Image (cartoon, rainbow, N blue to C red):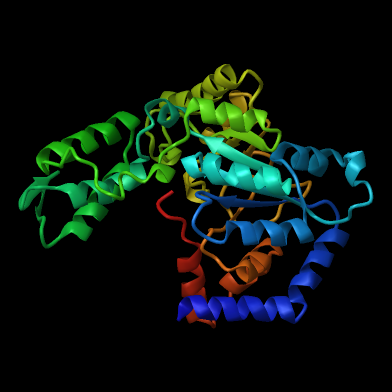
Length: 353
């Protein structure tokens, strides 16, 4: 029901002309840069989104869009194109970014920007936000006590999965996170045989060979997303924060053979980005850093706290049209329509990251 309401509302915005009016406003209001952020790309409406966005926006690589935003210098190829620049970014570097998104970029001449996590590329293991559900599904004991909390595993698998996820999400170091996951696998006697969901290759990170091929394709720009994808605001040791930010850039530049200029904060809401973290990003030599704070960027936007609009491949293209035009931020502030606000929040919640 909620999804249908969202699509109907987005349809009203589009077919009433409000989306077109918002687009014209941004074109006339001065320099703007819209940055969308996805994660996975396969199995939803990603192609529909790309085709709509290509028609109504000037899709650009992140670096080119930000150079234009801050300097005002426009690529001669786009001198007469008044459409608002838009960047399509994908976080984490899932395998389907290589097998599917890169093909779409090539076939439809649409540049993409992908933020990578080097340690996961090296290990080619599942990202930590899948581990709670995976461990709970594959647990072979009937009862267990984990970190002083007792579970009836057969009856409480969802609660167990959430408990594991919360523990690793709020870990104060990468070592704490990995130690807890190892302990959980042992205590719960996790089956060594991966199940069907764990064997989904599209949920694994890309390899270095795939990353280099994307980088050399001419359609993909690669950026940094920390070494191990911790939520930086929960890391208690400032030296570890600096390592996550700086080492990520060093490794990517070593593997790719060229400078890496952009950084994406893991999860990236306001509460996850302190002044100390921003300073670490500046000290590491990045030119720009993107958050997941909702908004459209202007020349006065902080280059180390750039806004992005979170979207998802499962959303209808009409919803994407409203999102990119900046109308969805207005809807989220309609406190007198809580049923819309709640459905909006649920629809935009990114799976785990």
